[in-house]
Image 1 (cartoon, one colour):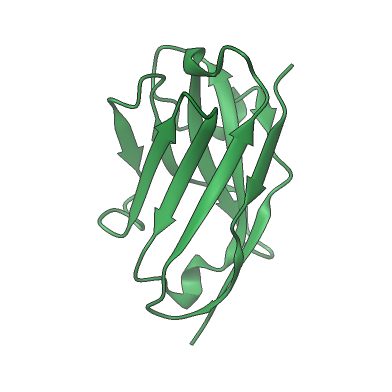
Image 2: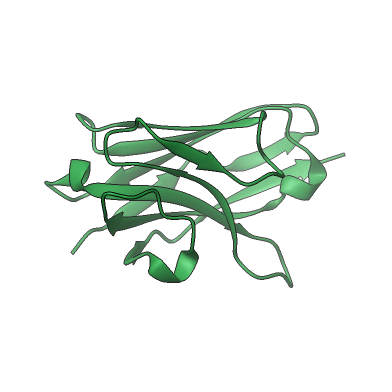
Length: 124
């Protein structure tokens, strides 16, 4: 069982930056592919970014490419999402997810563990 706790959300203005963190309880954190997803009110959960076990491979949704960066620190059992040039359409609850996999996973239904989410609100 893996517990995930997100932090770092908040209310910012368009153009600002935020860094989300997701702390994992897994002792074998480096065996898990990690991902970030988001869900806006009235919309389905969507993929944002994912990173491989070692951090050597990353993948991004087109909507955030060039603005968001996913990274991980396996020594701290933590994955990060650096969000720059935020836009009002980035407003959502952001979730991190974990899956024991050698691959970078971008499909929500394939993830085994989820955090409770952190709210990001971007005002115009």
